[in-house]
Length: 167
Image (tube, rainbow, N blue to C red; front, side, top):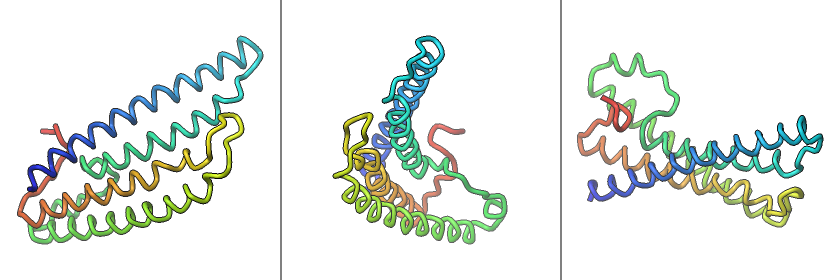
């Protein structure tokens, strides 16, 4: 069962990283078009700034969720890594429980933010404002799943100390 979950979450994590990378490329293209329009055409497109902001929220949140799965989130682990194995496992478990709690809050309150802003329109894009915030509950739920998976690995006696693909 844990192997199946690991396969599914690995696929989700890679898809999130790909979506994040594509979002970064699209945001860079939108900003590039804005700069070109402003300085070359003397007419800056109105949609580029808002689209870049929406894309930034999307790719940042997707990348953050993948970071929980792959373990590349920000942390200072010098003291934990120097500790005996048992203390190291307890510290990792506590950190994962904190991630789960914060991710649940992100999921619940992110969904509320989406619901409350759905009726507002982003003027330059014509999209509901809630579209900009959809990644909050989606990535929060995925972070919960990824952290639960890592917690189950710890409980099963497996330590995933480094990012996937790292030596």
